[in-house]
Length: 293
Ligand code: 8HG
Image (cartoon, rainbow, N blue to C red; front, side, top):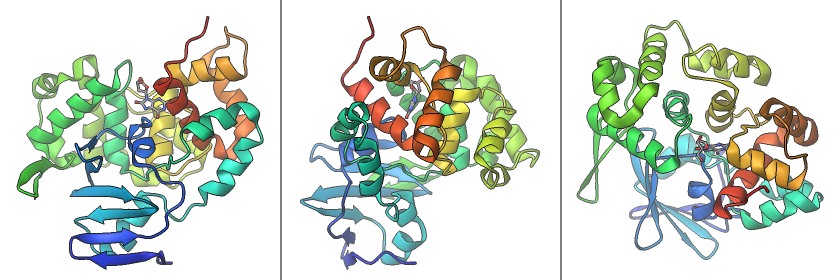
């Protein structure tokens, strides 16, 4: 089904009257690493081998550098535009605690990103800070990704598994991945050789997907949850990092509870919407720098 409310203009397309779509909330909520805010408030990002610029004006969203066909084929799902976030938020708002996070990040949408890129990106995320993760991913792309021109500037696509297979361990290390370099190298090799098929893993149930991803190097329960949530549409995932742990302790639980227990508690409570709840909580906790006594 094609999305109805779109119009073309000379530089791209306009989506009219979009609900639940705030650029800062979407791009700063922790789910993506390749979108950057511009001085005029627009965001420019690289995904699916393209450079895209996005602007919000009143209730309309303008996407530069794509046409209607590309929108219907790729970007409508990338921005998760077929999903009714109002209904999800109404459910969450019945919980007075989650309501605070939803009111704060009311324009969040979970992007449907590419499994290979997200697998490598979240291996890099382990024990790492977001600015460092962004830098390492950008370095990998500069070195091995395809170059793309947009408005006179050169950008780089995230490398394919064939591109990255050519990189030596030392070259990967030189991109600032530290101890994660060997995990990336091994995972790239297993995906490239066909031993592991990410599309097959994506086609499995949430629990199988969570287990299968953890068979790759450098992927534990948390990283596996992020990959399946952000690139495989497995919405029962509930990645628990320090921010989500603090948010859950702050709002719901005793302070000394373990990460696996938090995950189980949240999946019971939020069921197949756990991943959405997690994103509102992560964004709220990180932006407000919440602390536990
Ligand atoms: O969206 C995210 N959710 C959770 N739970 N953790 C995340 C997200 N994004 C992200 O980068 N992280 C991890 O949090 C990676 C890193 O360990 C830390 C950075 O704050």
